[in-house]
Amino acid sequence: MALLKPVGLFHELQFLKLSQQSNIYGLSSFELSEDSTKVVVATLGRLGEKIFSVEVNKLHVPKLQSLDFSYIPADAEIIAIDMYAKPPNSAVIGVALIKENAAVKQAFLNVYGVRVNTAASFNWTSIADDWQTLPLNFVPFQLTHTQILVSDQWETVLLLSGDDMRLHVFRLIGNAEQEYAVYEEPCKSWFPEMLDLPSSVTCMDFRQCGNQRLTVAACQGSYVRFSITDVTTLTDIKMWELNSMDGPFTVAKFFSLHSNTSDRMYHLLVATALEVAIVFWYSDGSGREPSQVVSFIRDVVNYQFSKPVILPGSFLHDSVMCGIVADVDWDGINEILIGTYGKRLLIYKLLPGSEDATGSFYLYWTRQFAYPIHSLLYEDITRDGLKEIVALSTTGVHVLQHNLDLAKRKCLDILQNTSLPHR
Image (cartoon, rainbow, N blue to C red; front, side):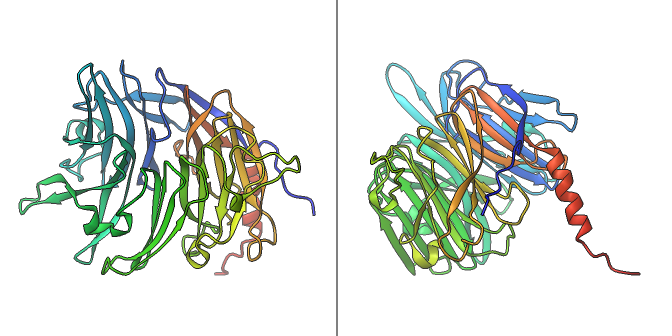
């Protein structure tokens, strides 16, 4: 059976050059409304501007706007940034940074938008000027967010890993006057499944399934922990461990095969920057051990780590730096997008007929870049109804647009096969 491999699935719409390099934690986004997605990139450099919003309007005119966030010293390096929407018209933004001088190295977590009036129109300046800083006694790594259950209400918290081999939980807590501030709370109070980690977490992900939370923590070393926690009690924890892959891990992400959000069969995508263990062995017939392979672990809830599937050829382009999952051809089945240090974007598609059997994937589409890729997003930043791939490389931000001829053809196919009700 011939496998579908489209030509020209995406093309580069715009490239926005950065004056300083970023890293794998330097790209973030949030959806303010159905037609407004904000994308922000943070840079590592100690000189000049550090945080930028990325915009491309409907006429495809790009705009890289410098955002002047308060209390980010000129000599600081931003390690990680994360954002989430604060309805209806604001956001909370976390920035983990390090300030280093000849005498001492200091780390901080700055949180912005804590007290902003959410009813007012969205305004970057209002968020950037409303800040709270928390000193850290560790080197920060990944900054992300998820929800916890507090008195039968879901609440969003910021989570930060670091070189102290712990997870740090930061909550926004308000008083009777609805004045909010950020506090660090013990990890054991909300994420007991993340206690006693043997190594520093470099990537983590969370998914909520009713009252159960799926957690994956992948570390600097060879360790991955997958757990299922009952969030109503925080005592019923099922846990599985993997020690057969050489870290550091660069990708650990839950996803469903179907782009329909009602699909609750979760799978796990993991990747490391170095080499792979035998359980995820891939042989090209040469007898050589691959230097890096991406592994797709099927139906993680039912099988845990027992059914790995290798993404073929993912070791051919240096270290895998990032990975996301999205339905890029609108067939209802998600594809896996991988960005590599070898300057290659790889898109993998499920092999037809293998969904309920082997779960095999094949290389669907690829694109060569001029620079190594650090991070990927799939968002509609042009606000034209079609999402774009946003790729952060070592020199800037690339915006890849869908082939509009393919999009038009798909739209016509859907219309021709849609039955409209008779009046």
